[in-house]
Image 1 (tube, helix red, strand yellow):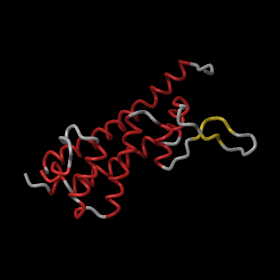
Image 2 (cartoon, one colour; image 1 turned 180 degrees about the vertical axis):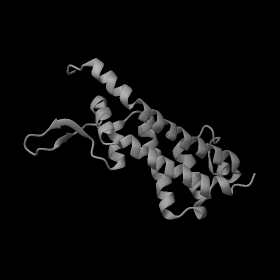
Image 3 (tube, one colour; image 1 turned 30 degrees about the vertical axis):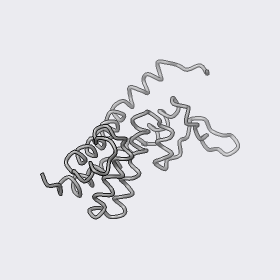
Image 4 (cartoon, one colour; image 1 turned 30 degrees about the horizontal axis):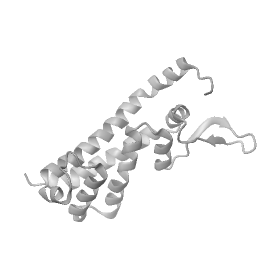
Length: 163
């Protein structure tokens, strides 16, 4: 392990904490909406092999998309399908993988002298991943995408449910 200065690392973590809080909150808000939709819609429950509050998110999303396909255009369906991996990377702190899934090149601080470009990070480099996602605004991008999906779920599914 390389020598790491702990105080600067703690400072970086503290500086990015509010962005992490917002992104993690959006991840939770998304999953909560999916589970509430399943609770309110018996057709979704019938599609699931387990109770809606225990089923894996991937199966929950698949069931919701199947039942509400007619309420969603193809772009909305794609956004919803693709939100789970982003949510998982955010919730599990996999910042390099999150950036890759967002289409952001996860670059470190080191510059390759041959190319003059920053080196691309490996997914196991959590410390540099935190620095990179802060520098590359990855958490903000995830938050914007999650907010879009929440708006889709609210407008096109939740508001159309009969109670």
